[in-house]
Length: 321
Image (tube, rainbow, N blue to C red; front, side, top):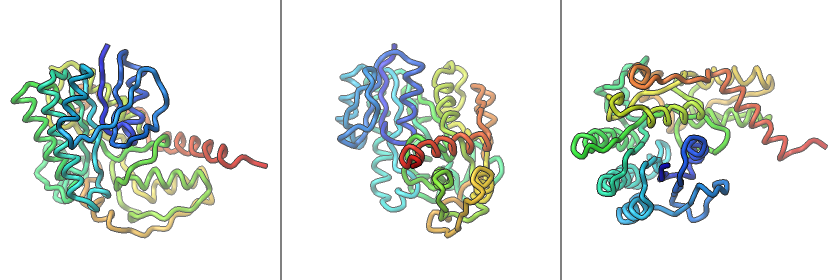
């Protein structure tokens, strides 16, 4: 049995992680977010609470009072939102992370998972198979705070011997929960529009290639990492993971096989410069060697599964006469 704390539980990743944890763990999941009302499905093994990770006392109390064994710290301000409010991004992404790490040390938490991001790469990094160790400098406050976070993971592991583990998530695709202002979120939105029979206006150029992963693979990889023996975890900053890379035009072509009438107009905005600073693909060798990382979904299977599920949702909302 394990008592698990999830921060940012109402976000795209947190909402799906809960289902994966419920299938693998016994015990109680304390799902937390800054919102007063929970949108999670009712489950006796899941308890919802309001938590502002910027508040050190709140973080200390919820971990201590509930005898938390593992923390999944997902609360974060993503790339596009971070550029609109850098101060908020700094406080949530860095202050929140330090609060979670400090409380985990003082309260004896056994394991901590904190995701990182491909946003830690900067424009100088090699575009194909960007290495885990790199000398590039991120250009967004999101990337800067996450890069600093990776160094904090290593520091807390070295100084306090706390078992901190991390994955650099690429763009994540999911039909279950709407994404929250990330630069790669165009892909989810494009699939949703195609399934609903609508055209789509894309905020990135048609040839912008970025690394991606379907949410089931991301969640399975997270749990695989967290259940791997500690001696296998050689990387205490963050592991690169991805399933495939594609451009908006390639995604459009996949979708037109499912909906021949689908059309996309390309009108790049401020998010284009963010995407241009990231690599086209990343090297996942360390994850394969250390804990047997192996995604299941390819691009075609991902698009087909998401399209069919969005189509079902659309038909439920608009039943035929």
